[in-house]
Image (tube, one colour):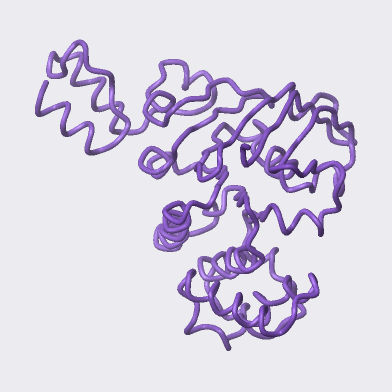
Length: 281
């Protein structure tokens, strides 16, 4: 059974004049890291909200098609019930803090308290989430005294403490500096090693090229490409979708024009593959 199965999903916001997602079908396997890329307003956030049940339970609008997380139909569950199956981390770290808890430990435990878990389970899960995200030393600090990157780690830890089967992140590094982004990516890489299923909407294509299992490109709410990072990020049509090649792909293309790249060798999308191509060109 897949971790996620979407069939013919079409969605229009209440005030929308056209669908933000159009006849979208997608299957994500357990343990897969799927990257979702595309230009602004391509449907990335809308897809993340739909998977987490924010659509149609908070943003109502016109929703057609089906969304299954394991055996759970998201349209049949409340957002709070879905939280045990799908964890959503959004762009702006501060917006995800509850505002009613005084320490990092309490903030991470807040969701578990709302689910009615007993104190021993809450303490154990919160402690484990602090350790996984590297926040143990900040447990008694106020979340509002932390940097943006640290706050994003608090938001991620709060989701991980609930232990959902599927983790969805909507451009979680958009407002982070390179160091904060690297910290978030390192946590996601560790979760991937542990077998967690992850759907990541992200603009930092160099990270996706290295670590994603599969990539989809959205444009006007439709899936235009779906393949491995290597195939998608060097695709000749990607520039027509509001994206661009990575510098490594551009370097490989220039080398090919100068006869320094083997004619039958595909263009590369990572630093290591570009170096190998130039050495063997």
